[in-house]
Image (cartoon, rainbow over all chains, first blue to last red; front, side, top):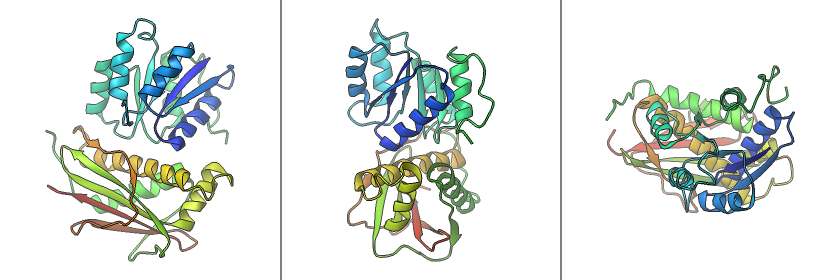
Length: 135
Length: 148
């Protein structure tokens, strides 16, 4: 399974990567990382990505523009996208869902929230029982 | 535009910062009356762009930042300024989101990307929150909303 992680913060990408690796530990997982939407599209061109996990506020190409452009491309429009953003209130979530986001999760990313989102997208068969951080 | 609730803002912002540092950087801090930040510190700022103008700043003792880097990354990046700045920016990003959720959960806020400030000038009307770690290392948080 290939997941594209978009965030201008190396720290945020690392957190998302760790979270995904633990929750999807039963899958052969490859996480690709990009610092903005433009880099993200470069990676999409060279990889068959199953899921995109993205921040909203990024330089060069932000999450809004990335999603809009994603939905315009026939090769990519059906790839599910989960937004992980510090500005994830109801107003923002509604706005992003309207654009086509599959889920909008708040930062800091909680494994339980990500599990629910992945299960709804059928990437998980059963929820992980123990603390997803491995404790 | 939704309503803004500034009641008990200080206590709520204190909690947002304490919780964020615990959850994301695995450090415990408590509130304190005065700054514990030494002469060696880093400052990161986020501008609030919409619907209100303002800014949020974190000023952190270098040694506390190193501790946080070590907690999250291990020893590899402990002196890496870019990694430290990135982590601090991300923490400030999360804190900003929590504050906006507290004061106006039905409002669409827009913020700038975090930036490292070399010679910080603290806004005159900024409210300040002081924190200190068990090792006596300081962190100060400044918030300023122009029209609130």
